[in-house]
Amino acid sequence: MTDLRTRLEKAFKRLDIPEANTNKFIEYLETLVEWNKHIALISKREENIVNHLLAPSLLFFKFFRDDNLSIIDIGSGAGFPAIPIKIYKPSLTVTMIEPNSKKCGFLNYVCAKLGYKCNVINKRVEEIEKQLPCNVITARALKIQPILETIKEKIAGDYLLYITSKDNHLPLKKKDEIIFKNHCAKLYFFKEQVD
Image 1 (cartoon, one colour):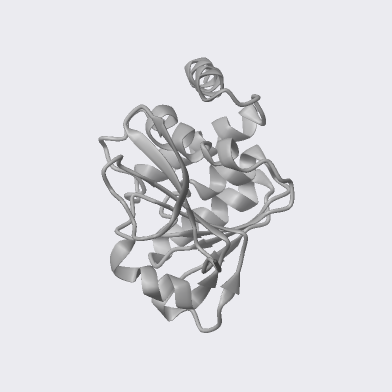
Image 2: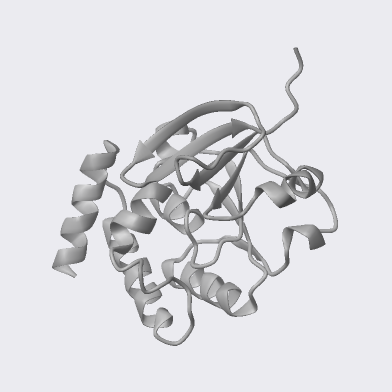
């Protein structure tokens, strides 16, 4: 646990954001590692969870500082970036869309264990019945371009924060981008822009 705490402290310094809720992050990551022994939540390549998964998730706070935003995360998997965002700032409203029922089981379990109320939707984004409103849509390592039009139909968001590789671009107007190690957080305008 000491090693994990040290890694988290270093990540907050490298990201240049104030440290917050370290014990909750440790509890989340330890629960994830334990569940990952039985359910494939993250790949074996992601051994350094703090640098490869958690820290890039917290790039969200380089763009947004508001305490009352609503976030919809598409393809949440093991909860990146949605759960780190919720842990860092519990006042945010977080909804996770994940089609895999075992991963949804983990998401519901870990949110309850941490004492956070999050909405977990066990569906593909294409199966959402009515349009969901939010301030920010998030997605990490998801092939989003083929379903971009569907996302526009199903989710009414102001921005899309896409955590991906540097050379992966979307046909949307980009507001900003931050590169952290091998990860790139790209913030796009998602609402139709009126000139």
